[in-house]
Image (cartoon, rainbow, N blue to C red; front, top):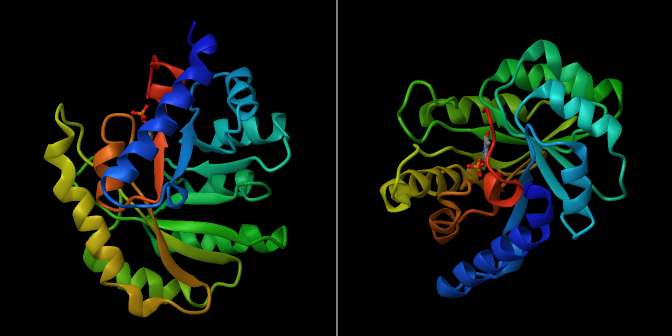
Length: 234
Ligand SMILES: *Cc1c(COP(=O)(O)O)cnc(C)c1O
C-alpha cells in the first residue's frame, strides 16, 4: 500500500529538511537523509533509489546483509544503525559503508579485524546515550574519550562523528535538550580529531523529531516510517 507514496513522501521530507535549514540558517547540503528501510521489501528500496535516494539504514545485521547482497546499485550507501552483535559484524563488513551504533571498544576491534580482511575502511559513528534511559543503548558521555583513544590505533576505521537516539515523546520539543547534549558532546571532543578521527557528523532525529534535531545541528537524519509507511514491528 505504501509503495505508491514513497516518491511523494521523499519529496515532502526533503522539503521539510530544506525549510527547517532555512529557518535556522543552515545549508541543506549539510544534512543527509538516511532512509530507514528496516522490515520493508527490496522493491521499496529500489523505488526510493530510483527517486535519487542514495542512503539506506537498517537496524538488524542479518537483514542488512540480505539487502546489501540482493540490491547492487551504483552509488548506494548502506548504514547499519541498530544494536551491534560482535559475531555478526563479519556478515556486513564486505559492503557496509557506515556503522552508526558503536558503543564499545570491543565492537571497534571486531570491525577493524573484518574490514581488514576485505581491505576496506568503514565509517563509524559512536553512539552516545543521550536519553538516560537504560533500554536505549550507547556509551556514557564519560566513556567517549576512552573509545576515541582506542580508535586512534585502528587503520580500517574512520571515526566520523556521533549518533544518538532521543526518548519517544509526543512533542519533539521535549527532546531538544537531548539533541543539544549530543552536539555539545561532539564539540567538547574536537581535540581528538586527527589521523582517522574526524568528529563532524551528528546522526540524530527520526520521523517524529528530525526537524528539532536539524535545528540542534544534525547532519544525518534517520527517517523510516514517514517515507516507507508504518511498520508491524521494530
Ligand atoms: C527505526 C529507526 C529509525 C527510524 O524510525 P522512524 O520513526 O520510523 O523514522 C531511526 N533510527 C533507528 C536507530 C531506528 O532503529
